[in-house]
Length: 227
Image (cartoon, rainbow, N blue to C red; front, side, top):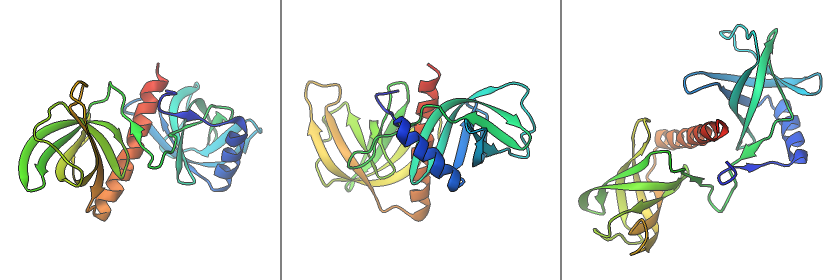
């Protein structure tokens, strides 16, 4: 987990919870691959618990349940693992949980772990039709780094690409992109590695990419938290 996510300090954590309570930030609790609970923070309970609004359809919990969760606050996503339970109309968990986030670089990118299938199916390079399967090495809602295990055709900085993003069993998405960086490595796993910037995005595509980026972070955190 530490290779991808970074833990916030104790001082930062306290500030985050205080501000998140003031702004009624949203929290998503992922119990397993099929069960998800969406809620909002309402305040603190007995000083040591964070209280969220109990969804009406979620009646009760006889025992505490464990979840990998996402706190969305101040244009950031914080991930944590916690036990939670229900009292009355509140869903409660301890606020002393470890909070993790995806570190920022110049452009925030999510490193794709080996166990996750992540592909860009390239259909067109400039005006040339092609059928290539490239592996996505890292990803954000603005671009990605990909690797090809062939040196033909040769790609170059400035090339325009059309292809389909495909992550696991998720629905594929067509994107247009421009190569910003390109490297050749004759002896490595990939013969060509390049950075791709997503271009010509519609409003719907921009929204879809942002959601996909958050969903992937949550999925990777959920899998790593189980270990």
